[in-house]
Length: 185
Image (tube, rainbow, N blue to C red):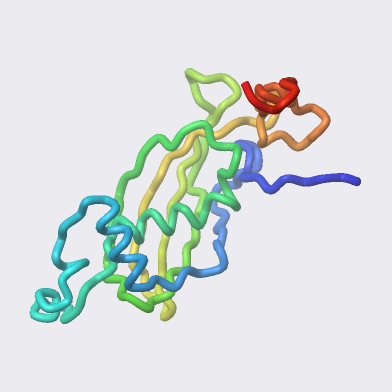
């Protein structure tokens, strides 16, 4: 039986001016916001203090913008970079033009803005991605431009989970304990 492992795209598969719609959307709960905010040591009352936030211009707590950013990027991983990324190189032009509220559903999309082969790392390429997050009404709540380094198809190292041919995988590279009788080192 043929097996296919879900993966992102190799450098050659990214097509500039292509829009990827990442589904399903993510309905954001109060618990999501409070947990993310406290896990990241962000003590901003705008995310945690309902009484204080009620007296502010939006009249309620807002979803932490870093949660929004992390979610729109995270939603793209399975479709674009799962197992094919070498490194996340950075973000630019990040903006949050409209707040996200508890109970809103966040929909993510990504446009491939450009790509080029790496000048210093043969077998790898740099892809520029423009991420957009919209709420359930189609209102843009976040945008970010990101550059990622990804593998070229023919340069993926042996044993990489991004490979298409399961027979070409080196089991020792995936699990060094595979040859040990009890599976332990």
